[in-house]
Length: 192
Image (cartoon, rainbow, N blue to C red):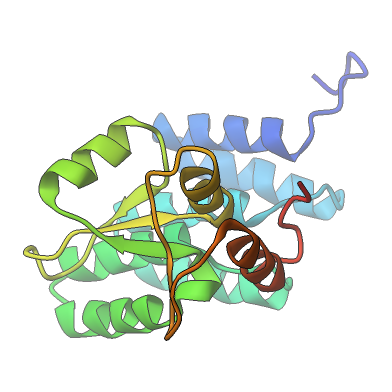
C-alpha cells in the first residue's frame, strides 16, 4: 500500500491488524504495530484493544496487562472493550474474584464508558442485532447489561424516542438537558 503512495490511516491499519489477529497471526500483527509506533503513525484505543483481546484469547494475560498500562501511558482511555477482554480472560482462567472487582469498578464509572442499560434477554438480543452498542459480559449470569456510547444513547432518545434517561434525582431529562450533559461528559460529542 505504502509503495504505491497510498498511506493507510488508523482505520485501515486497525482493519489490517484485526485481520491478522483473527487469522492467528498475532506475531505478524505485533511486527506491524511496532513498525507503526517506530514511524510515529497514529494508533488509537481500537488498535490496542485488538492486540489486548488477541493476547487474552491466547492466555497471555500479563502481556495484555502491559498493553493496558501502555494505553494509559499514551493518554488514551481504555474503554469497555479493553476491560471486557481482560474480564473474560480472568474468568476463563478461574480468577473470578479479580474479574468481579474489575466489573464492579466499570459499572460504577458509567460516565467514563457511556451508558449502561439493565436489559432482559430479549432486549439484549434485539439491541445486539440492531448494531447499537454491545452486550457487557458479567460474572453474574442472571444480569444482562448493554453498553451504549453517548452518541447512540442520544440518537435513541432524541430521534427514535425509544429510550428515556433518568437524571440522578431529577427524573427523565429532556433532549436539551441530555445533550448538554453528554457534551459535558465527552469533549468530542457532536454539535447539532
